[in-house]
Length: 279
Ligand SMILES: Nc1ncnc2c1ncn2[C@@H]1O[C@H](COP(=O)(O)OP(=O)(O)OP(=O)(O)O)[C@@H](O)[C@H]1O
Ligand SMILES: [Mg+2]
Image (tube, rainbow, N blue to C red):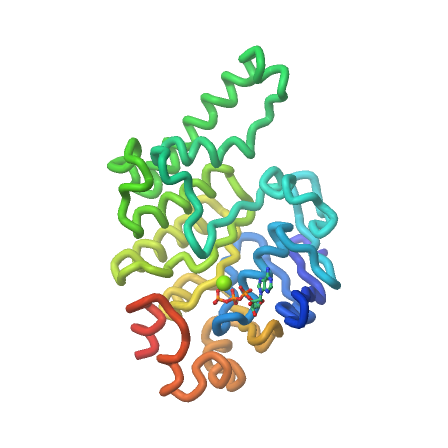
């Protein structure tokens, strides 16, 4: 694997019963880039994320990843090691502890990062205290970065959807990932919130130097933040390249947009940005 590659997926396939959800998909994610998967509903995008997170094991193929201690075969790692290797994610449907505060959600997220052992934890030794302090410092830093000060002590359950999306992003950042997986960061957000999300993603890439692998339907957001794009359809790779190359690729236009009349048939949340940008 070349030095500039952070993650390399080769010939990945996964079958669920009769459905070949991902079929011979290969791609490389370069260090420091924003790499985006696009494609119509059911294309296999989230399944690719679930293969990287080790929620699923591929039927064939493998993923290599440049971890903190060198390149390793990610597909041989148990799922509980993934966070420790510097991979964090947000989910298509927000997954937070609803009845905890924003700060607590961030601290819980951070626990995957803890270096202190069980004995140290039991006796509340110096390493544990040190880890707690570090976790708090990181959480406060992320709260500041994503402008969440105002919501710091609010229960997640009472927050508007758009803020919860940012909290989920914050929780992922608290683990100090090298690779951040974002599954539809703009879904359910209004125009203004989507613009903010684009700024956060750019900050995460440029200020924090974190590599981002994203699934996204909003083409305005995709073009704005992505260095490279990979389009999938029915589990297969259709095209890859710059956002412009991919968006104008005839196969992508046909599969993703169909005729312009078919755009409204794509299942998107009400008033989603995809519909806005396609309209
Ligand atoms: N655990 C599972 N069991 C059975 N089928 C599954 C499972 N997970 C995904 N699939 C199927 O795999 C295909 C790809 O699904 P996936 O969720 O990856 O699509 P997607 O590209 O993320 O779509 P969307 O844009 O709607 O989120 C679909 O046909 C889906 O029904
Ligand atoms: Mg999905």
